[in-house]
Amino acid sequence: MIYATVIISFIINLINSPLVSSSWWSLGIPTSHKEILEIKPTSAKAHCRGLSSLEDNQKQLCELNHHILQAISKGAKLGIDECQHQFRRNRWNCTTFEDHPKIFGSVVESRSREKAYIYAISAAGLSYTVTKACSQSLLANCSCDNGIRSKTTKGKWNWGGCSDDIQYGSLFSRSFLDSLEDNSTADGLMNLHNNEAGRSILKSKMERVCKCHGVSGSCTMRVCWRKLGSFRGIGDELMKRFDGATKVRLVARKTKPRLKPITKEIKKPSRRDLVFLEPSLNYCERNETLKILGTQGRRCNATSLDTDSCKLLCCGRGYHTMVRSVQDKCNCKFIWCCRVDCQKCMVQKEEHFCN
Ligand SMILES: *[C@@H]1O[C@H](CO)[C@@H](O)[C@H](O)[C@H]1NC(C)=O
Ligand SMILES: *[C@@H]1O[C@H](CO)[C@@H](O)[C@H](O)[C@H]1NC(C)=O
Ligand SMILES: *[C@@H]1O[C@H](CO)[C@@H](O)[C@H](O)[C@H]1NC(C)=O
Ligand SMILES: *[C@@H]1O[C@H](CO)[C@@H](O)[C@H](O)[C@H]1NC(C)=O
Ligand SMILES: *[C@@H]1O[C@H](CO)[C@@H](O)[C@H](O)[C@H]1NC(C)=O
Image (cartoon, rainbow, N blue to C red; front, side, top):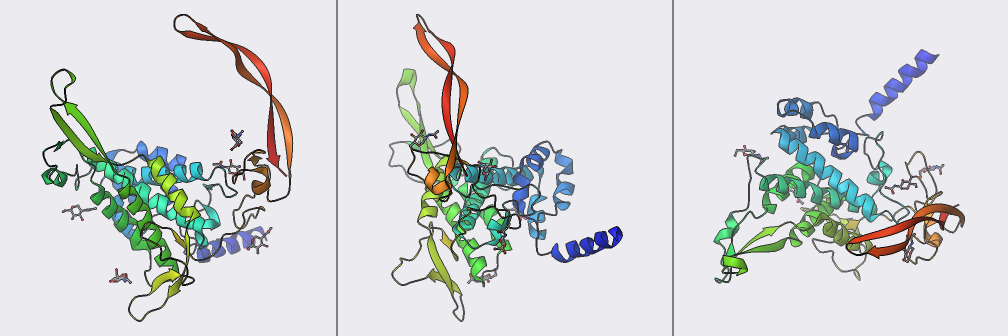
């Protein structure tokens, strides 16, 4: 009886496995990330080949050298961490599940704006870390963007230093991620659009930084280069695009199927806007099969008017309050010079949790 169950579940796993194919995001979870950072250069190739979470063409790119494997892992982690930061106050908080092949659970099997965010932030994350690896001369095919040096600056300053080569990073992100998508289906086109939105925002947030050279602080020569903006800034911008995401549908044309807004009144999404096909679940109640945790037990804010307010976060179920004594600094005095001395005292802190 036990054997029969084992065999049956084995067969079910076999049947299911191509459907629940794993994904590159798993390279960004803490355990794999740590392992990849410690990998020996010589074992990177075998490591990439053995990764069931990568498709064949992704394995080929990963195999190039251990720095690219590390950049991929860092890119996945950057995206996951930023997503969790941005959604920390929302009902869906970008939870990851190490035991789920798709890491984010069923959200990435939906067609929602949450999925759009995940795709955009991780495509941007991958471009970001690959571009940074280029600037550090870790990869064979890229380095600093020296093409920019020939651009005119009207003599006010000079291009110099190491400009980040976003071109290569984006190209890599495209080959690695976009190749998985089918551009004749609505789902494929949604993912392709959102991947590109992430990369495009990354590019738009590049900054010029300058440094002065000259005797004793004078600025006789000013040298500038272009570098990637902070990834937090990318996450923030994508969050605005998440709030304003456009609901689209597939318009089948003979030659080129395309996505269009669901009604004529809605303006066409730009390259940098996020698009989605179906409304989101409310993420209020726990659902084991869908890997949705629900908001019961989440800490909420009784005075906030935002998504973390007890009203919104708890989905109308109400909340309970707990008073906790915490140690805090108090009676701080400034002691000349230069030190601040504090006493420790216990303060009562109210915390609210969703029912
Ligand atoms: C790197 O450059 C080599 C030689 O030009 C080329 O064959 C290879 O496809 C390039 N790889 C990537 C990832 O760009
Ligand atoms: C879809 O992809 C194929 C193969 O990469 C390409 O030839 C074709 O132009 C693409 N179609 C659209 C609509 O982008
Ligand atoms: C979880 O979601 C699935 C799909 O929507 C639904 O069929 C199922 O009843 C839900 N389970 C619970 C416990 O709500
Ligand atoms: C997300 O919410 C769940 C409960 O719903 C909680 O256990 C988890 O720690 C939260 N994750 C993050 C990253 O805040
Ligand atoms: C609750 O929200 C208010 C208003 O947004 C904010 O000032 C306060 O710091 C928040 N409290 C906590 C514990 O996060």
